[in-house]
Image (tube, rainbow, N blue to C red; front, top):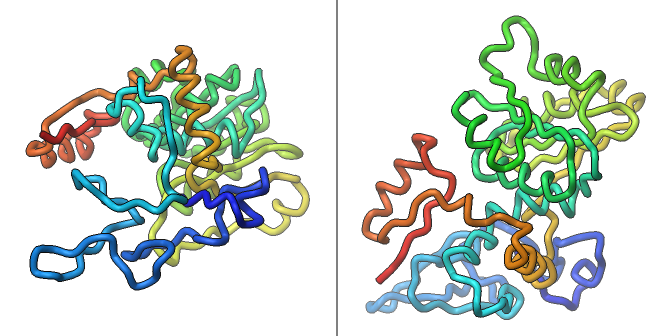
Length: 286
């Protein structure tokens, strides 16, 4: 997520979407279209995904993508805020602006959903309800502030949104969709409270997926549906603030790292993620 500091969006506190270097899925450098940052020994272009080349020991960076941080912070913890943890915490803190004493529902307790729980905990939410198909996620979620759990596979003849509406007497103040499913976005929207409820979508769905909402519900119930890239955070402003909260023992980054492995074991690390046994695995090179 670029932060050029010059465009109207970067100068505004309302957005983290740089209009000078707009976010797009591209193999090129953001400033120089049709130019990659690497070539191989034979002079052939090497491409990279989402402007990231994190498996390189040396790389080329655009100043719009560089953030200076406290040098006392270990790279094994700073790396968590390049994505993932920052996205979830930021969605609760900056995008939704979760209020103290509020009720939060999180659909999907992967690393992003757990980061939302951590952000909601920091904001003072009184109830944090996690929704997942893996019952083991509740024990994990409790470490991040999750207070209640709903297994969407054991709701019998009810929709998950119906169960949540009953639990919360009319809906949650904030709902977060962290899976990447348009149908779950609809469920989340259905169980956020009328009048002021907010639904924030973080999950990446398949290209072309559409969200279908009842127009009567949209008009009459006064709810808000919004997307959140990188948790609404401005990298140069907010990453140092989050690291400051980590140093003051408010933001608990350490509990996100469940494994640390050598780079040559990266396939084992992916398998741990696929099996749901790992939240975040730090890979060490060299």
